[in-house]
Length: 265
Image 1 (cartoon, rainbow, N blue to C red):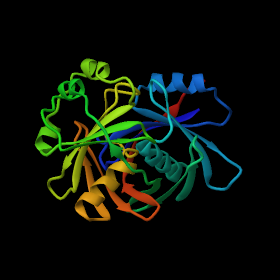
Image 2 (image 1 turned 90 degrees about the vertical axis):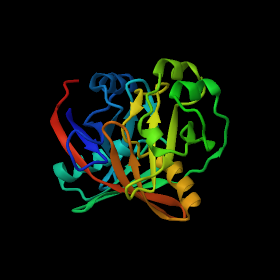
Image 3 (image 1 turned 30 degrees about the vertical axis):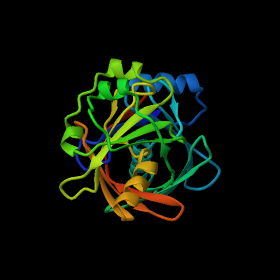
Image 4 (image 1 turned 90 degrees about the horizontal axis):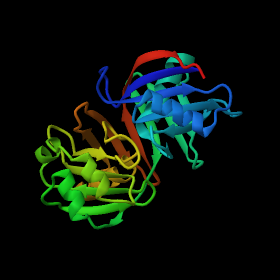
């Protein structure tokens, strides 16, 4: 099976978020896709299969631990692979939730259309804050579609320097898939973020497109802007431009293919 590793949300190899991309030509069981994702040991691996519709592919995402319904960086990576391998510039991906994710590749980058989600007020358990190393928060909200708790803090430098105790973090909550921490941006970016998800994937996801389904609307309302620049300040780091539309959001960034080969299944 043709397989790739693609660094997404970056224009530089070995930065951004690496995603696996596998081109499925015959059906694979869920267990085998999970095995492959665990073998690659990336935050997510996307499995693409062509459909009867032209330029349309089903897409499924697996972390090393479980299936993930929606993933931004693996979608970006998949669009990059299809554009280089088959010269496909406009591709619709349909995920397991039957959501159509439209992508478009141009010389300036890759654009994706993602759903627009909201948040509701939430509580931040003291044990969770202690595990993250956070002393005070500005706000805590929850997104149901992704099962993610989001915390806003005041200082982006504090966010950059967070060094969570992941064992304690895992034990601090038993009903979320991840915790997203965000702060006002610096250096031309509107907001910063980091995403920790030991419950469902790796300890930290380097750059996370899917969280922007609710993160970008949150900052759009707070800043009064519909076009924003986002920076995920993990060790690898990555960036994206986000535009809020009436019914969806547009995410735009770049990607670099760093590995191409075959998996024997």
